[in-house]
Length: 258
Image (tube, rainbow, N blue to C red):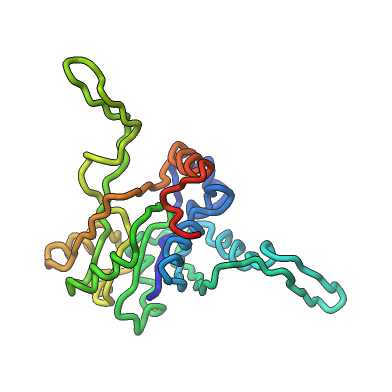
């Protein structure tokens, strides 16, 4: 099953980083968040990816075309132009289809442009290029197959913006720094779609989260896979710092791979 990753947005709230690179290339622990997302899927055996490129897509192309060179020793013969790679340290067996889906296309438009790449696929997955989670992809796919509807969205509880207090008779009995509870369910990405989803898309200016998902819900074709575990998107510098701190601690919750 192929995995589409929306990787073409501007990331305006991360302007300090995204002036030079697209948002999915902002790093956590020295590697782009896009790489972390792909590692999550790869852990469950899904190794064919379609990053939907837009803003500064060449940066993503350069990252993957240079991936082997950065990961091994090389000998360059300047006379013949031959490059020999030695001591390959790459552990990822990925197929990555890098497609330009338009600089100004919106989320549904990017998926719409990939319809031909997904021809013949009865089912595929899609997520955003800025969020990590410890979602059990195997259970997500099994849930989607069990209900027979066109679409599944992973529902998550966002981290609270502020610390939560438990108070008893004026005394704070417990303090939780930004707990991931109590704020209702939101769209956390990590979608599974059947090919019929393309009937709900209409050109580059389609916003996936508007008419397509709204109409799928009206048609009783959208199901929610509830994920109570870790989920975090990277919208701001503060989010980036939080994720980097978790990675540096050696206990990043989304690191499901060995």
